[in-house]
Image (cartoon, rainbow, N blue to C red; front, side, top):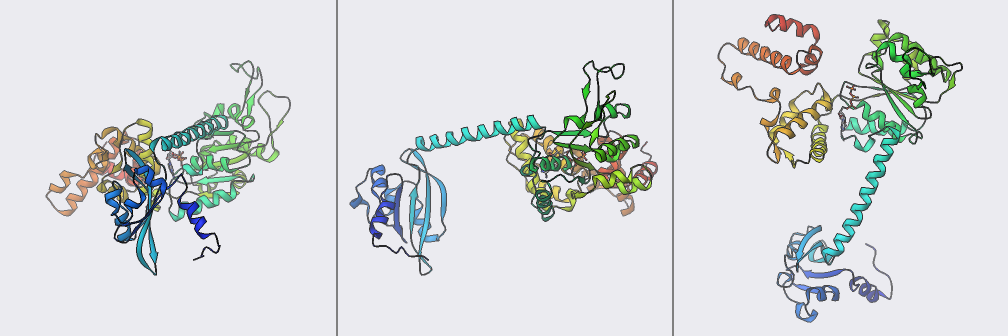
Length: 455
Ligand SMILES: Nc1ncnc2c1ncn2[C@@H]1O[C@H](COP(=O)(O)OP(=O)(O)OP(=O)(O)O)[C@@H](O)[C@H]1O
């Protein structure tokens, strides 16, 4: 340890201990006061010579100094109620030759008014920051940045590191991962971290635009380009994203003829609106996302290989939730906090058996499914913790199953039948969803539906 090497030692200690802003107290290992500065004495309205040698609990209300002097465990920023005020107390053990010989205590704010002033100042600043953030989001079309992506599993950490590396610069990025893994969140974050973050972020959902509208949506049109067109014309998504990022979501679902046109724009760096006389120079960075096996689509000639190479310069794979169980607890709490903040309902935690069930579940719908489960539980619960019975039906233990009699084969078949039946009911007959929920293939699902006579 560095020793204080100066001839003004006493003056320095005097300045540190006797300043007007801090209250100091020192106790020995049995909790008897050996020092108290003037500031603390005048706050407590005691005379220094009277308190020296007294037990700290006889002088300071709710003191824990004697405990810290015993345990040797420091207590930082503890709220202590003294003389009608909430104070912020720090209690630090003093060690000599490895043994606890006493403790030093400080009180930072001598009354709540000072503290409230500071607190409200910080609150004001945070509010202002929040307003600037949301303004920025509205202006540039992105809602999320990397700090909105919860998860600290090794996979997520290394993914976030990669994102930080590749986001600056203009390289095209392909985000891959199952539905609900957070691809859009990553696309937003990439834009946020890029030099284009003051320019627009424009999303195109390639699966949602009808084929006959794709061209006008992507490239826009000039006035009077076709009947039914807006008089003043309309800019396309490429023009809107000029200087910024164009996020091509669900790119695997893009029709072939649109793929050709997009490729041309990317190669030539110019777009031609419908009815335009001249092409317009365009500078966009492409971030694309898909949960489709693009390589297989290329083999089946449903996706263009040249477009694949164009968008697949850097590929980021977002792992499914079941591959990173370490993230489930963090995500569940993060989502609970988000939902309660939005709904204003006070729910603090999950019962341990709920979290245990979350760990067992396969999460075919990934974080989106977890979000839905928590959102519905928040609405259903009327206590401060989420319990098993607040979860959707598919999470409920099957009490019938417990009481069933018969051979093992019969019991298992019955359980299988119920699982398929319940999933079909919950997915309102959407078989693709059911295959995701149950983690089985399409043909296996059809076999089971037939076998159990479920349709
Ligand atoms: N790591 C995460 N932290 C916090 N929220 C997350 C995370 N991952 C996903 N989410 C949330 O889950 C939902 C689904 O995420 P997102 O829409 O980005 O998934 P996606 O992979 O793009 O899905 P799809 O392929 O179906 O479009 C969103 O509401 C998002 O906020």
